[in-house]
Image (tube, rainbow, N blue to C red; front, side, top):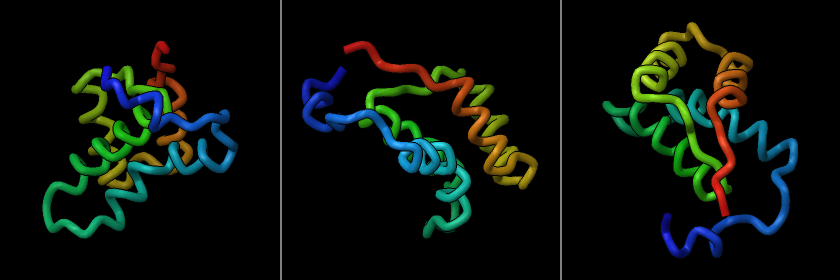
Length: 95
């Protein structure tokens, strides 16, 4: 774990708005991203980085992440589905 994680972590609990943004990050990133190629990969990396900075991590394996990102990109998973995925596959990092 990076030694600077604590200095980047917020001092308060995430608000409902922060959780909503965290849950919608992959769909937003893949839809509005500036790259010609790699939107899906970048979106999930951004989501994972956002979670780590805020004291959480994705617990899904590579296959699950692939299915999730491809479903979002294909429009098969909406914002509610993305929120459910994150509820099921995000864990709190140990201090």
